[in-house]
Image: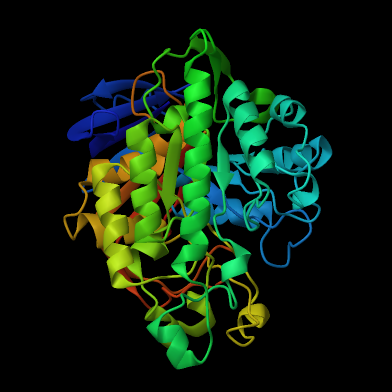
Length: 464
């Protein structure tokens, strides 16, 4: 048993924070209250000055394993996740080979099972991620895939998108979409605007994102309406965070009158960056589409101006856009249009990022800085309360992928992060295998001190 004493406990479902001790036993949250250390606990953690919350859940990571392990592997990616307070991550399918078959999926799940946290995996929507033929979504779901995505490559075949959404609705799993139409892009990773013009490149305009978000929101709306006309007896398997063969499946009926929310989304708009795309998601939700949207910490923190200072370390897809776009993302976090904060943790080697701006790969790492960026940029600036931030980093991501974690209640998984929201630290080094971050040298507030997964202490800050 573990006793966590003297902390402020966040319940993201109630959006409140109160002083309680927490008892963890047999991999579950056993009790809340005020308890004496009477010698019956194997471990006692003094959480004075800290917040106790559900372990963070990141539904968008690239661990580059199999095939690109010089950038990251499942072990080092999980180590970075633990240090950031994450107990569950969902790996994207764009490995080499891609996760479009049961064998590769099993490899990721089995290797993830050795890490100490819950490393889950999405599978590819299309065979070979070529956008031409659907994978066997039924078989891959049965093999442990928690969702589907061709992240990194947009799906350009509308009929394939619709067919995938219909299957997702039937299987009750989410599809996550990378929304950038290559027809509008000349140089990816940098916003088409004032900065790109000064750099002498065209870049990637917002319309590349906006056009596909509009298309997929409307397809999702049509599929949602068709699904709502059913008999209301569809069931949902709520998976335990362990994933794979250890997953806990509990079926329950879905309500006939589905209300758009993360737990019934069939379409998740990944790493949204444009204010127009935000408006399209807002409209689609209002009309009843089963859509969800995620935003990265770098998109709600930085603008295209960061490319001047950080060069390729501020290059990502979709790109950092304008201050008006950044403010629209924050407003959408406030009003619930954006449900989820996800890192899009995308490691690259130093040599790759040392290439020219037009030749270097897009993407940055994010697992070890996400919580602090949320506190520094959203909570400290009074855009969100701390419980609201944690809901978007634990509860809502878990709901999107139909997981039982992300909750602070008796009987819930003992997946916990203990963090000091007031500790100031400077970003200097990483447990990730890569260090491609524009936040190196940045002073942030908020730091994970302990990460507990399944009732086991898997990370402790060395400076406690």
